[in-house]
Picture 1 (cartoon, rainbow, N blue to C red):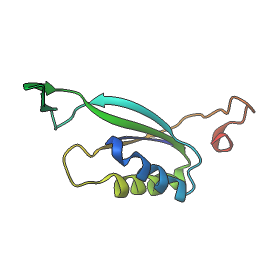
Picture 2 (tube, one colour; picture 1 turned 90 degrees about the vertical axis):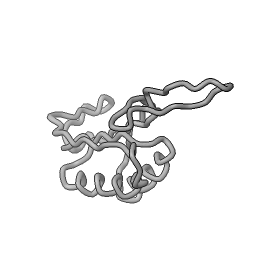
Picture 3 (tube, one colour; picture 1 turned 45 degrees about the vertical axis):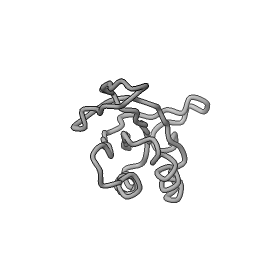
Length: 112
């Protein structure tokens, strides 16, 4: 089992969710986050004053998925979240040691 974590531009969330649903992903967790990478933020103008926005709004999605679907999920995220511009985000894939469904006590792939 894998945990796929992706940091995306917020306006790409619906496209990514649809692409994952089409491939059979049954659930995702979404968190609104702020951060920066190579972008290093940007300057904005507000009421005539210029100020620096260091942390940019992003969306973090997390998907617990079987090993055989992980590459397909990553491919779907890359394809739909890509704008070709700086700040498109990152994807992290990590090994999941154990998954337990609280309601039923199921473990492993059955819990997904």
